[in-house]
Length: 215
Image (cartoon, rainbow, N blue to C red):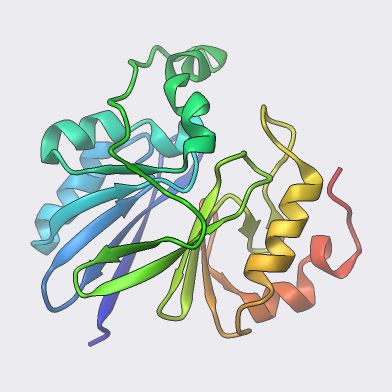
């Protein structure tokens, strides 16, 4: 059995990937980006007998944070967020309004994430990398042969930059510096869609090969 287990839970109208990452031995887990269906995420934790220790947010767009309040109420664990996305986080009701959905304000984050920091699940830690472009405070979690990267790099595509705070040049710099510097075997767990690897994207992603450009 692997030392770490990771479960992807696609959910909601945006088919966003919430992730559970757990230490297989201690059965401690963290939840990354609880989106629209928090009941599904909490039920999966209970089914697997995992104890939740924290909520890690890659960024604060509505589809990645809609379930934060419900998970916090159910488990009372710390919320981790980069401060550059705090304005987006606090504006969840307004983000919901753009979609015609009424959403309540979220509880304040408990822990600030910063590039170069470390976060821990059970006996294992991950490096925090600040990877802006899709949003000002986007972060990615790197370690154990994987990168959990939110909406920065996808299987065959890259994150959009036409939302408030988006920056195409910053996105491509984040990918070059923080993703393509990793070994080709590194698994990319993205905020939407299937897993991929750095090697596959380096060779075939049209935004990285020069076939397409991010505007």
